[in-house]
Image (cartoon, rainbow, N blue to C red):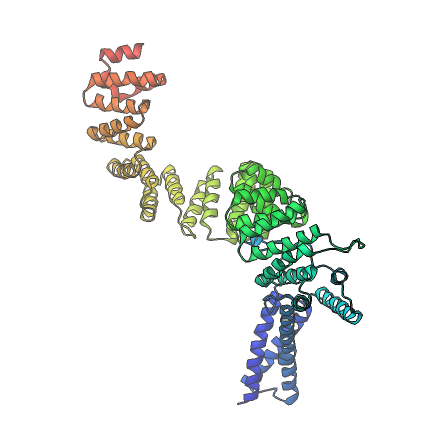
Length: 590
C-alpha cells in the first residue's frame, strides 16, 4: 500500500472541491485551467492507487505540483485577500466573493433600510492642518506629514488604519473640531457606531469654539461644519437603533441645507424602520429629487402600490432609468400596478423581462399570461403557460389557469387533462376541484365529476361551493335524493347564496318535500323580501299543497316585483291546478 500517495489523493480531492466551489462563485480563465489540471491529477492518482501503475517519482511530482501546490497557492491568495479587506474596511467579508449579478438584483425594504447613506466625506489633510495652528515648526512639520500619510491610507481604502490614526490625533488635539469630525466620520464608515457617536457628540460641543481662518477661502464655515457633524451623528444614531434622535439630527441638517436629498432619504429610512410608512412616503417624495437613485423609486413605488395609489406607483416606477430597468423588485411592482391600472402593454413588457430574469418563479408566467389574456392574445397566453409549466411542472397555479384558458378556447378535453395534473401538483386548489367537477358535468361525465367533488371535499371539508356544484351534477344525473343531501350540506355552510336556495328548493319540490321547501323559502324571504324568484318558488309549493288562494296571492307579488314572469307562469305545468282558479285567470288576462 502506497501510504504517501493515498495522503496526496485525499489532499487533491479536498482541494478539487474547494476549486470547484471557487469556480462556481468566481469563474475565470486561471481557475478553470487549475481545475482542469486538478481533474487530470485526480484521475491519474486514482488509477495509480487502484491499478498500481505510474508511480514513478516524476509522475508523483507532477501530481503534487498540479494537484496540491497550484491550488494551495490559490487558497493562500484568497485567505490573504480576505484578511487585507477586513483590515481596510473593518467588516466581515466572505472568503470568496460571489460575482455580482447585474440584471437580477432584488431590492426590498430591508435592503433600503439597512443601507443608510453618509454625506460628504472626510475633511482633507491641508484644511485640518491649517485649523490646528501649531507654533512649533518641527511639531507642525511632523503633524502635517502624519495627516498626509493618514489621508493616503484613506485613498488606499485602509479605513480602519486611518480611523486609528485619527483617534491618536484626537488625543493629541482634543480641542480640534475637524480632527474630531474626521475621527467620528471614519468610525461611522467602518461600522464602529458607538465610538463614532461619542466622538461626534464631542465635536458638536467643540463647534461653539470653532473659528475658521478668515483669510482662507477653502476653510469650512461653522454652518458647513455643523451640517457635516450633525449628519454623521444622525448616521451613527441610526445604526444604533435610536431612530427618533437620528431624525432630529437630520432635520437640523435640513435647516442648514434644505436641498440635501440624502438627509430626506435617511429620515425616510428611519420612519420605515419604525413602521411609519405615511411619513416615510412624505420624505421619499422629497428625496426623489435625486434623479439617480433608482432604489428610492422602487421603495416609494412599492409603498404607493401597497397603499392602493396605483397611478402614483406607476408614475414613480416609470422614472427608473434604463440601466436598472431589469431590477426585479421594481419590475414586479410596476407590472402588477400596470395590471391594476389596465395598462396591459406595459404589464406584458415588465413580466416578459421577469420571466427571463427569474425563470423558476411561476408568478411571473401567471402575470404575463394574465396580461396577454386581457389583451385577447390567448395563443400567446397559452404559450406563456406552457413555457412556465415546462420550467415548473408541479405548479398547480399555472396548470389550473392554463386549463381555464383551454376551456375558453374550446379545447375541453385538454383542459380536463391539465386540471387533473394541477391536482397532482404542489397545491390541491379548491378552485381546481370545483372547475374540473363542473367541466366534467358539462361533458356528461357525471360519475367522474362526483368522484372529483368527493376528492375535493375530503381536503376542503367546509367548501360550500364544492357541495353546491356536486348537488347540481347529481341533479343533472337525476340522482335527486343524493342531490338534496349535497345541497343540504351546502346550505348549512352558506344559507345566503340565492342560487343555492333556488336549486335546493327546486329539487325538494321535485321530491315533493314541500314542508322543507316552504321553510327554506320563508327563511330566505326574511333576508330577501323583494326577490321575485323566492315568491315564485313558494307559490309552486302552495299550488302543489292545494293552497290555491295563497298560491295566487304569491303570484300577484311575483308580478308586482317583476312583470316579465307572466309568460313563465303561463307555461309552467306546476301551476296546472290553478288553471280554473278565477284569481289565476284574471291574473293571466290582465
